[in-house]
Amino acid sequence: MSAELAQDDKVTKPVTAYAPEDAALLCGIGRLVCAWTMLEHSLEARLAELRETMGDVRTVGARTRPTMTKLMTELRTTVAMRDRRNAAGLTEIAEVERDLQRIDRFRTLIIGGFQQPAPDGFLCRDLRNNAQHVSLEHLDEEIAALEQVAQRLLNI
Image 1 (cartoon, rainbow, N blue to C red):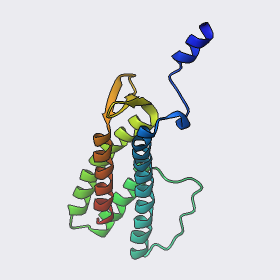
Image 2 (image 1 turned 180 degrees about the vertical axis):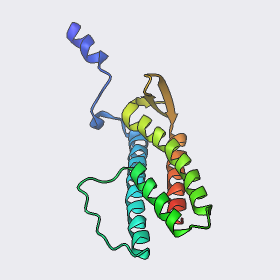
Image 3 (image 1 turned 90 degrees about the horizontal axis):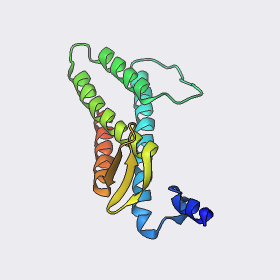
Image 4 (image 1 turned 45 degrees about the vertical axis):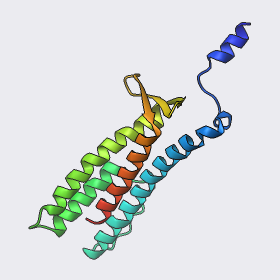
């Protein structure tokens, strides 16, 4: 009897055990992760393009990928050198950074705090171990916001 109770108390279950109706949830989380990674790669490519137009022909061959913070710092520095008399690019970067920080907090909540599916969404635990319900609509809104931020960044 106690072994049965121990099995019932388990919170985690393998991904293969999720019901077909949870497919949208798993797909949404995957889209969020992929959108973030695509943003990082696009920003790296844009920085390489900006470096090349400024005459910098070095090849960056780091073994590890730079963090989003390092990428944004390099973008800010490059744009500041490019547009010395026009601060509009730096203003746009500051606005984009605020949005990115908000989306990154949400992404961290989802990736680090996912608990289980719930009606119309899923449950997560934040860094303070507070339970939070995230709706699928909210997840879709954040993915759309991330895609808009990516477009804004690449247009700077």
